[in-house]
Amino acid sequence: MKKSSTPVREPAAKTTGSRGATAGAQRPAAPAWRVRTDPAPLLPDARPFRVLGTRAAADADPALLLRLYGELVRGRRFNTQATALTRQGRLAVYPSSAGQEACEVAAAAVLAERDWLFPSYRDTLAVVSRGVDPVEALTLLRGDWHTGYDPHRYRVAPLSTPLATQLPHAVGLAHAARLKGDDVVALALCGDGGTSEGDFHEAMNFAAVWQAPVVFLVQNNGFAISVPLAKQSAAPTLAHKAVGYGMPGRLVDGNDVAAVHTVLAEAVDRARTGGGPTLVEAVTYRIDAHTNADDATRYREDDEVGAWRAYDPVRILEAELRGRGLLDDEEAERVAHGAEEMAARLRERLNADAATDPMELFGHVYAEPTPQLREQAAQLRAELDAAAGADGQEGGR
Image (tube, rainbow, N blue to C red; front, top):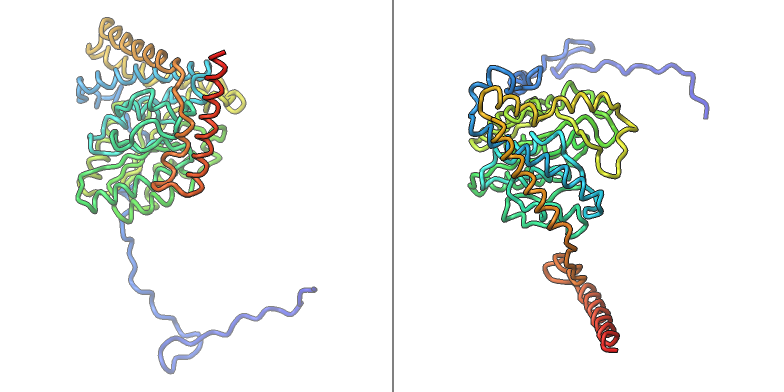
């Protein structure tokens, strides 16, 4: 159909609301409007907050720094050992957090026993640092059970493979705890790629509206698998996203464990005392590939990785401790020996084949099994009994 060539006429001017007013009269002034929240206090610093290597390091608690150093060394060894176990076929997959240990360790360290941690799939080290048995923490990545640990016992939600789905759960738990009068804070972790998900938006919005006692830690490691941050977001920083929801954003050096601990501790305290949620962006780097199934050389240069290797969270803290006379060779060796013992125990336990029971397939599906499940379970049980009987007959010959 041809478009009409008739010129489009503008609608006639309408009269104002007052009686007797003529067309074209000045319209009334808009009602008074104001910004509900001054955005300035919500904006993150222009540069990532740092402690180590600055004057602020002198005020850092030596005992805390030594404890964090021990956790970093063990965390690095945990990452290298888990990666090796994957290559040996003892784990189905392992998303290493090598280079990001400062974020993982600090996240676990700032929480009280009553608080909850909501990890993503790359946060196994944070889960272990929270106190979960390393083998139980790796059960999902071994391909055995969906969660190898009791979330209620450790106050750690299941490791989340879908991106950002754990964030609304963290908000819901924190909001429910506050309604019950429980003094609980939820700390939810995700990567830079997770901020592109709808779940991230929904969690941030609900958290701010409800003023839920929750802290969001975004580990910006530069890539969502192979997609660099520049192709995900045009925001000045990911911490700036907080302003749009009405919560403060903090930008921190993710390789400076003392800085991450400081910022997260402040955010947790703010949440616990009724100040509402905070979004923290930790700028760090993923040294290893996305997982053992990824070829990172296809999307990043060796020089880039090398520069970040030089800015290593373990080395940064070790240099600070040695410079202040808080760490000597003997203490460093003691910490390294403890990390090796942890790795040896992990190897020994994961080298043993897991005892499996096919009937567990039907457990934890429904509180009350459906007729179909009961029928399927009975069928499987009959097949297993028949196979066991056949094996017994073969053995008796």
